[in-house]
Image 1 (tube, protein in one colour):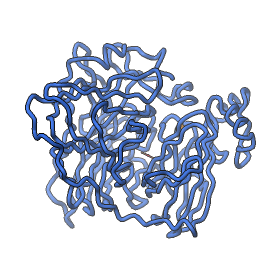
Image 2 (tube, rainbow, N blue to C red):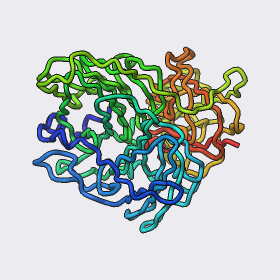
Image 3 (tube, rainbow, N blue to C red):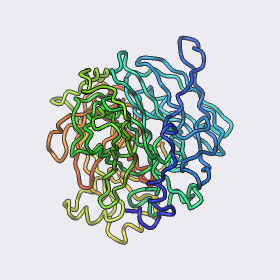
Image 4 (cartoon, protein in one colour):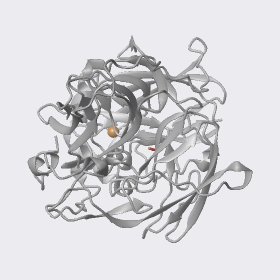
Length: 489
Ligand code: C2O
Ligand code: CU
């Protein structure tokens, strides 16, 4: 993995640092302005450079790009069904937009430059206004040069509360990110480095929770926590192991799922993915539970310690219900669904995978990917391909057209040697099979992580008309071509 060799700050210094107070882990909650017309709540997000304390003393602060002066940006909290009005002000030196990741908003509010709106120039503003049909854990980020704008800190959580929220003692959001910092805690400016574009993406050397290198979080024995995890990293995949605690997954990408223990004992989150956990704190007062990220073999590290208070909140975990009510998503009709194929290829070692998988999986006449072919492709500006095409910009001929209001199955093949979290805008979809085997939870998602050589089938009702982005959420892969447009009409 690219972790090695790029570690300007040692893991020991950073990931084991002891100075970050637990209180520092809170995300500022957005204070809503007075109710606007039509009951719409008014919120302003200002994107601008700022200075934030990512890493503890003795390191200095870090120059970042912030929403409302912080990283992450403010936690926006809405009620299901609410109509919201959010003004974006651009205080950056370049164009930007905001995309409301996972929210099923109308096309014109989706924040994709040139495709759904003109990008907002420096000094400009744009008013987003939409209703939020689904309760759950979502997030927001720019869709303009995301690999750098998100990488410099532009992102924030957006929580839509259920009409009757789950009963818990505490509802906590952890926005995870990783950074490539220099030895003086500055952001390394090598965005779009060719190695990152063609391999695993920009993996950093410093991991933060809510914009701070975490140390410990106090918890109370017996307490029930709803933990909302958001992966805002450009490229890092997390696989969180809570040790002796037994969290249950109750939602994925904001959408409720039958509560279950995480598959393989690890909560896996590719970039842009979310998980809502119900975590009952069991264990002895005064003890410590390590949360360890085990996703990359040989690169395991302690993310944070949960420190159990001396005083018990209660003896036994509460027996409150933990299943969330379903969101109003249309159920795809698998019998009459239209089938579509999507093949991902490209990247380093792509030729080897193609050969293994039968050689002809190019789809749409994609160029050969063996050794020299790779270099040739990089000259054409694309490294990653969907159905043989590498995207440049957001305005593209649709790669698929889905009949509006109809059910569709999209069969996706990852013919590369790398993971890809594939994201569709404007819709949530059910993940129905992996490598031909029905999934156990048939989960609704907006981003599905595909392992190297894996095939995944997703199903949806195409009920939101427009031209929607479909792309890998490893932002370097997206930038290097792994993006397309799916038309719903
Ligand atoms: Cu989270 Cu197209 O993005
Ligand atoms: Cu990718």
